[in-house]
Image (cartoon, rainbow, N blue to C red; front, top):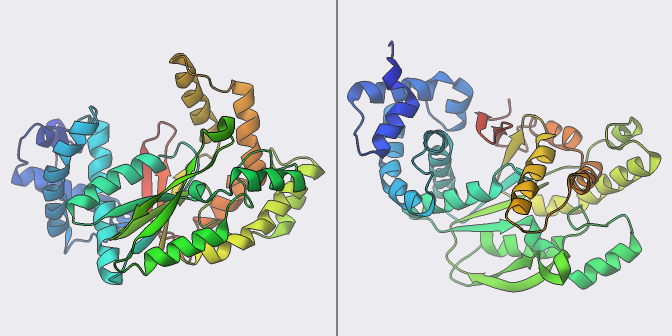
Length: 354
C-alpha cells in the first residue's frame, strides 16, 4: 500500500494524541510498519496472524496512559516521544505482562545499561504502563546493593584501586540474592528493599532507610553490569584503550574474576534485556552533556577532564567492548537487545540469534 506523506507513523500518532481516531487505512499502515522489521516484530511476538489484535491492545493502552503521561511530562505529545511510546514502551510492557502471566509468580526482569542509556526513564514509564495493566512494579537497582560507607572504607584500604563505588566487589551480593529470593517467592509478606543515598558522606554515599513493599508483580532490576559474565582472561593480554598499562590489565583481570561472585545473583533473573549503545563511547559524551547542563543551573559538577578520568575508570574495570558485545550475541543469556543511538533515540530492537 502506498502511503501519503500525511500518513507517516508520527503523523498518525500525533493526530491520535490530539484526539483523532485513526482510520481503517491508517491502522493498516501501522500494522504494515509493525511487521516491516522482522527482528523487532519477532522480539515482541508479533506476526501476520496476530498483528491486528496486538495493535488493538496497544492502541487501547495508549488511550489509557497518554493522559497520565501528559500530566508528568510536558513533552509526552512530542512526535519522537510518541514513537518511542508506541514502538518500544507499550509493546515492552505488554511483553512483560505476558511473561508475568506465564510465570504465575513475580517476574524478575534484569536490565543492563550503561550511564545515559535511559534505564531510569524506561523503568518509570514501564511502571506507569504496567499499573494500567493491573501490575505492581518495583524498580530496584544494583546501586541499592552497595556496601555501606564503612565497609567500603575498609575495602578501599584493602584495595586502593577501588577509588569509586561501582566496580565488582563494592556490592553486597548476598543481600541481593536474599532480596530477589524473597521477591520471587513473595506471598503476602512484606519485604524491606535496601536503598542507597548517593549524597551521603559528601557524595561517597551510604545506605538509607529501606523501602518496605508487598504484592509486587514485576521487579525491574537494573544496573550498569547486571547480567555481565566473566570472559577469557587472556583477552587482557592485548591492550585496548584505556586498558593500556600492565597495572590497567591486572585491574581488568581482577574485576573480571570478581564477576564470578555475582553469578548466583544473575541466576535469580528470569529475563535480561540490554540497553545497548551502538558505540560505547557515547556514555562519555552523555556524561559530559549532563554535567554541563547541571553546571549551567548553578550546581557543582565535574569538569570534562574529571569526567574522562571517571568514565575511563569504569571502562578499565569492565570494558563495554569486551563484556557487553559478547553478551548481546548470546541468546542463552540475553532475551532482548535495545540499541540506543547518539541522540538517545531507540535504534534496532531484537533478540540475539539462536
